[in-house]
Length: 431
Image 1 (cartoon, rainbow, N blue to C red):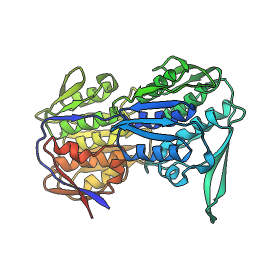
Image 2 (tube, rainbow, N blue to C red; image 1 turned 135 degrees about the horizontal axis):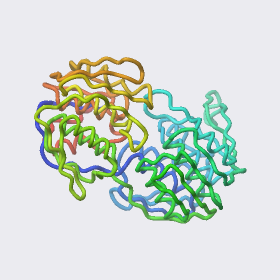
Image 3 (cartoon, rainbow, N blue to C red; image 1 turned 135 degrees about the vertical axis):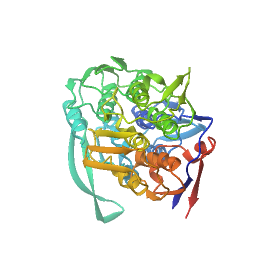
């Protein structure tokens, strides 16, 4: 078991580099299953979710080779779903991408329910509705694990033999639902139209990768995608975009700790509303060609509301970092997370540190500041909460211990090493 020890209260200085996008890398790696040819993916973030996805891909029969520290080659000549790593699928929310990728490659397969962060209900209705309209039948059932006849596992039984082109309207702006429909459409000859498509930067990145593989896609970056697929998608080379959520986390951290750090590989166009909200808190920024420097305020001001929405709105993934920032702002900040009902787990932990916060219901909270946070023993309940608690610990007086840091490792590559280079007093400890 590992945990972080952080001594807070120090100003930070220097540059921190944003790694490849977790939310782009996992669907792109899965999309490599759509072709028998080699794919080479660069700028891979070295994080737990990516490692688990690679294990899943290998269990299906794909050959995976590391060609550099962040460069991976995948060749999926033969795909056999009967050998799927069930435990890895159950641990990883991103394993939901197997629905779209395998439906484009195989006629029949079974996959267990996906795992992931405990942030509330994350229904898959949009996925099933879209795939059903495209001719894929998904049945919910239990089956026995071959190696242990006494154990049964909940799974989806998929019949994709009737896949077809169609014009579909998604039931909501679902990022992963859009990506599953895109992968399947890219593998079906003819034209598929997807309306109410999500437009997040990582959705665009997957679309650009599918184009390199031979699909023709109109409307990338809009809510209507026209995809002309092909049975024989080819291998492709692709560089994963920088992680906008990681960039936002570091920018918010710089404001909270009142430190003029430089965030490299931060793309302004992916962060428009995040930057605008931080300006409301009193911060400013120096925007460079491939970097953003924080110009911290002398006094952080509370904002009327932080309201998370589908892109180009403020991402739900950075709601918790904004919540920690609000503890240092003068006045009350209203936090509204309309997307998930389990995103406020971090609030009980920052309350232990002295934060003044009130959870009104599963979607709304009020945080009052400024508060002098004190170091405490706290727990990371999910990926984004973990990164937020690191920010709280950096702000706080004294020593903070953060446990369950596996959650942080799922999305942030060796974050303690990168923060140490900024002057943070943080270390990973094995118990």
